[in-house]
Amino acid sequence: MDSETFKEYLEKRYYDQLNYYEKSSGRNQKKYKNFQWVLIILSALTPILAALNEDFKLQFLVVIVSAIVAILTTGLKTFQYQELWANYRATCEQLKPEIHYYNFNVGPYGMPGVDKEALFISRVETILDKERQGWPPAKKIRDDRSLGEKENSGTSTANTTGTTDETGSE
Image 1 (cartoon, rainbow, N blue to C red):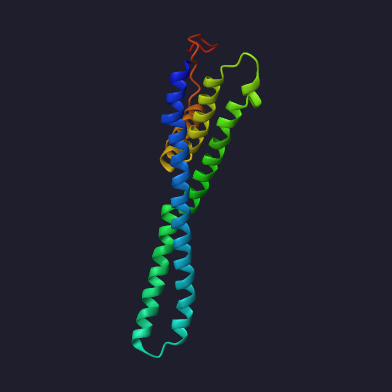
Image 2: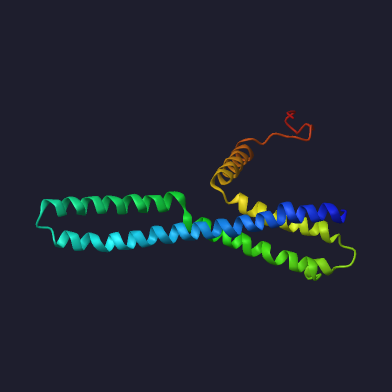
Protein backbone atom coordinates (compact mmCIF):
# COMPACT_ATOMS: atom_id res chain seq x y z
CA MET A 1 0.00 0.00 0.00
CA ASP A 2 1.40 3.40 -0.91
CA SER A 3 1.87 6.03 1.77
CA GLU A 4 -0.64 8.44 0.21
CA THR A 5 -3.46 5.87 0.38
CA PHE A 6 -2.54 5.02 3.96
CA LYS A 7 -2.42 8.70 4.92
CA GLU A 8 -5.89 9.15 3.41
CA TYR A 9 -7.14 6.13 5.39
CA LEU A 10 -5.75 7.66 8.59
CA GLU A 11 -7.40 11.01 7.97
CA LYS A 12 -10.75 9.89 6.56
CA ARG A 13 -11.33 6.69 8.46
CA TYR A 14 -9.16 6.18 11.54
CA TYR A 15 -9.19 9.70 12.98
CA ASP A 16 -12.78 10.24 11.85
CA GLN A 17 -13.93 7.10 13.69
CA LEU A 18 -11.79 7.90 16.72
CA ASN A 19 -13.41 11.36 16.97
CA TYR A 20 -16.88 9.89 16.43
CA TYR A 21 -16.52 7.40 19.28
CA GLU A 22 -14.95 10.00 21.55
CA LYS A 23 -17.80 12.49 20.99
CA SER A 24 -20.56 9.88 21.03
CA SER A 25 -19.25 8.43 24.26
CA GLY A 26 -19.30 11.87 25.87
CA ARG A 27 -22.80 12.66 24.60
CA ASN A 28 -24.21 9.39 25.89
CA GLN A 29 -22.45 9.79 29.23
CA LYS A 30 -23.97 13.25 29.62
CA LYS A 31 -27.48 12.04 28.68
CA TYR A 32 -27.22 9.09 31.04
CA LYS A 33 -26.03 11.18 33.98
CA ASN A 34 -28.68 13.87 33.37
CA PHE A 35 -31.45 11.26 33.26
CA GLN A 36 -30.10 9.65 36.42
CA TRP A 37 -29.97 12.92 38.36
CA VAL A 38 -33.53 13.82 37.39
CA LEU A 39 -34.66 10.32 38.39
CA ILE A 40 -32.87 10.53 41.74
CA ILE A 41 -34.37 13.91 42.56
CA LEU A 42 -37.91 13.02 41.48
CA SER A 43 -37.76 9.63 43.21
CA ALA A 44 -36.68 11.32 46.43
CA LEU A 45 -39.42 13.95 46.12
CA THR A 46 -42.24 11.46 45.59
CA PRO A 47 -42.45 10.04 49.15
CA ILE A 48 -42.00 13.51 50.62
CA LEU A 49 -44.90 14.86 48.60
CA ALA A 50 -46.99 11.81 49.48
CA ALA A 51 -46.30 12.34 53.20
CA LEU A 52 -47.39 15.96 52.97
CA ASN A 53 -50.55 14.91 51.17
CA GLU A 54 -53.43 16.79 52.79
CA ASP A 55 -54.53 18.55 49.69
CA PHE A 56 -55.90 17.16 46.42
CA LYS A 57 -53.42 19.30 44.46
CA LEU A 58 -50.51 17.62 46.21
CA GLN A 59 -51.97 14.19 45.49
CA PHE A 60 -52.17 15.14 41.83
CA LEU A 61 -48.55 16.29 41.94
CA VAL A 62 -47.47 12.93 43.44
CA VAL A 63 -49.15 11.12 40.56
CA ILE A 64 -47.50 13.39 37.98
CA VAL A 65 -44.03 13.03 39.53
CA SER A 66 -44.44 9.24 39.73
CA ALA A 67 -45.49 9.13 36.07
CA ILE A 68 -42.45 11.20 35.06
CA VAL A 69 -40.17 8.81 36.99
CA ALA A 70 -41.74 5.85 35.17
CA ILE A 71 -41.33 7.58 31.79
CA LEU A 72 -37.69 8.49 32.44
CA THR A 73 -36.89 4.98 33.67
CA THR A 74 -38.42 3.52 30.52
CA GLY A 75 -36.51 6.04 28.41
CA LEU A 76 -33.22 5.03 30.02
CA LYS A 77 -33.92 1.38 29.32
CA THR A 78 -35.08 2.02 25.77
CA PHE A 79 -32.33 4.38 24.62
CA GLN A 80 -29.54 2.56 26.49
CA TYR A 81 -27.39 5.63 27.10
CA GLN A 82 -25.24 3.84 29.69
CA GLU A 83 -24.56 0.88 27.40
CA LEU A 84 -23.78 3.15 24.44
CA TRP A 85 -21.49 5.27 26.59
CA ALA A 86 -19.59 2.18 27.75
CA ASN A 87 -19.41 0.58 24.29
CA TYR A 88 -18.30 3.77 22.55
CA ARG A 89 -15.73 4.48 25.25
CA ALA A 90 -14.36 0.92 24.99
CA THR A 91 -14.10 1.16 21.20
CA CYS A 92 -12.40 4.54 21.44
CA GLU A 93 -9.91 3.21 23.98
CA GLN A 94 -9.13 0.24 21.73
CA LEU A 95 -8.56 2.52 18.73
CA LYS A 96 -6.37 5.10 20.51
CA PRO A 97 -3.21 3.08 21.09
CA GLU A 98 -3.24 1.37 17.69
CA ILE A 99 -1.56 4.35 15.98
CA HIS A 100 1.17 4.32 18.64
CA TYR A 101 1.75 0.60 18.17
CA TYR A 102 2.09 1.30 14.45
CA ASN A 103 4.41 4.32 14.86
CA PHE A 104 6.73 2.63 17.38
CA ASN A 105 6.72 -0.88 15.84
CA VAL A 106 5.17 -2.46 18.92
CA GLY A 107 3.84 -6.02 18.91
CA PRO A 108 3.04 -7.44 15.50
CA TYR A 109 4.10 -4.17 13.83
CA GLY A 110 7.70 -4.90 14.77
CA MET A 111 7.78 -8.32 13.14
CA PRO A 112 10.14 -8.53 10.15
CA GLY A 113 8.51 -8.55 6.74
CA VAL A 114 5.08 -7.43 7.95
CA ASP A 115 3.06 -4.95 5.89
CA LYS A 116 2.46 -2.45 8.71
CA GLU A 117 -0.17 -0.44 6.84
CA ALA A 118 -2.24 -3.49 5.92
CA LEU A 119 -1.93 -4.81 9.46
CA PHE A 120 -2.99 -1.45 10.91
CA ILE A 121 -6.06 -1.25 8.66
CA SER A 122 -6.98 -4.84 9.44
CA ARG A 123 -6.72 -4.32 13.18
CA VAL A 124 -8.67 -1.04 13.12
CA GLU A 125 -11.43 -2.52 10.97
CA THR A 126 -11.64 -5.54 13.30
CA ILE A 127 -12.16 -3.19 16.27
CA LEU A 128 -14.83 -1.24 14.38
CA ASP A 129 -16.56 -4.40 13.16
CA LYS A 130 -16.63 -5.80 16.70
CA GLU A 131 -18.49 -2.67 17.86
CA ARG A 132 -20.94 -2.82 14.94
CA GLN A 133 -21.73 -6.46 15.68
CA GLY A 134 -23.04 -5.36 19.07
CA TRP A 135 -25.88 -3.32 17.61
CA PRO A 136 -29.33 -4.88 18.11
CA PRO A 137 -30.18 -5.15 14.37
CA ALA A 138 -26.84 -6.86 13.72
CA LYS A 139 -27.41 -9.17 16.69
CA LYS A 140 -30.86 -10.07 15.38
CA ILE A 141 -29.52 -10.88 11.92
CA ARG A 142 -26.76 -13.06 13.42
CA ASP A 143 -29.22 -14.79 15.75
CA ASP A 144 -31.65 -15.42 12.88
CA ARG A 145 -28.87 -16.85 10.73
CA SER A 146 -27.51 -19.08 13.46
CA LEU A 147 -31.02 -20.27 14.30
CA GLY A 148 -31.61 -21.09 10.64
CA GLU A 149 -28.30 -22.93 10.46
CA LYS A 150 -29.14 -24.93 13.58
CA GLU A 151 -32.56 -25.83 12.19
CA ASN A 152 -31.05 -26.88 8.86
CA SER A 153 -28.26 -28.92 10.40
CA GLY A 154 -30.61 -30.56 12.89
CA THR A 155 -33.39 -31.57 10.53
CA SER A 156 -31.59 -32.10 7.27
CA THR A 157 -28.93 -34.72 6.82
CA ALA A 158 -28.67 -34.37 3.07
CA ASN A 159 -25.64 -35.87 1.40
CA THR A 160 -23.88 -33.00 -0.33
CA THR A 161 -21.04 -35.02 -1.80
CA GLY A 162 -23.10 -36.33 -4.67
CA THR A 163 -22.30 -39.93 -3.77
CA THR A 164 -24.79 -42.65 -3.09
CA ASP A 165 -24.99 -44.38 0.30
CA GLU A 166 -25.93 -48.02 1.00
CA THR A 167 -29.65 -47.37 0.64
CA GLY A 168 -29.23 -46.06 -2.87
CA SER A 169 -30.16 -42.45 -2.01
CA GLU A 170 -27.95 -39.46 -2.51
